[in-house]
Image (cartoon, rainbow, N blue to C red; front, side, top):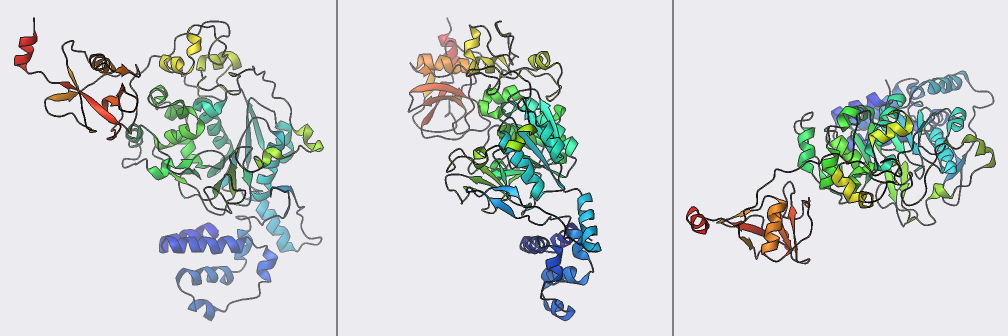
Length: 548
């Protein structure tokens, strides 16, 4: 028997409140050292236990009625280790932890057994520089999760192999890719970490995260992270159609979308191996997503949401990950006593781990990764929407640390995000050969062309609505919308179709801006600041009279 089987039995027998209560009792009990459990003053009799209601009585009977039950459980929730606190409340140095001078046989066996058991949580540390923060974080994870494996990946930055040799973690130095903005290398590196860690859950950390305890609230879903209130994503129907190939009734809910998958997020290993595999992630049309939405779709937090939702994995916010904001002690979201904390740049005094000073003896635990970085606003370390599979192979010699399936940004995206390269030689080495003119990007998805009738006439509606009235019809293309704008003496704001779910679909007149654009959302909504432009339907008789 162990704690997991106890929780499972309670979950099967009782509702959510009983489940939460049992978890709380178990967590508190197993946070005590064995010596304190044995010296606990109150030892209830069987008669006393029998008077306790339902699952509470069962819990106490399980604790006190089975010999040595607690000894096995120590390996599941390690005892808290006191630490020296900095002014920011960070534990800077763990207090020494040793057995008593003359440990009993049972205490020695307990410690030996604990060292052999692997924790269900493995840690993926995504790093670049900030050596003091990285070294501190590795040690904090080891303090609170002594049996958890740690995998450190540097995105072309510092080499922490000496740190991992000393602390017992795995280190991988990948070529620089600013993978936070390019899902093809980002996903592959997280995938490789999941393969190596081989734990039920992978917890992703960044150098600005702090760790405060063992997990207090078990993960409630397949994937989870910080609560980001009121966040929504676009192209929901597109994603749900893909997800239903694996999970027929899947819904990408607002609650799922409100989960921020940044440092402090967790992922089931099986979800990573499914959704982030080279083949699965390439089933998403990333050029289509990027053209319809904004470039933020390529940032890791957004891209992970689309990848997991498109495979039907359940995503929920996690109370054990907190977002610290302008209040030094009260989180913006998440529990005050959360295990993992993430900090905004607005945090009083700055992000705590970035204020740490490197200890002199730790200077030998890292070195330069050896990759030369360019300078300027488009340096390799900050370049966004700059991925080119062919250039990656040319620069680094293989597809190690990135997707093995070729991908190239569309011509439309290149023109949108790097317009200067249409007339000037390339200065983005990840995208093209420096000094040469860039090649043409991949062809974009194009909507079915709708012909323009040179005799067509149009009506700008007076009221906000989603449909055109009788004897009129909606416009079907940017070209038709351009023709309508010309004939109505309005300016066409965009030559591409846009995706705006908050506006009606079709050719739209924007009242505040006094201009026109073509909107192609999945559904669209009525908007008081928008008016439809409709094409007048001409009868056969009228058409014959208009013909020369």
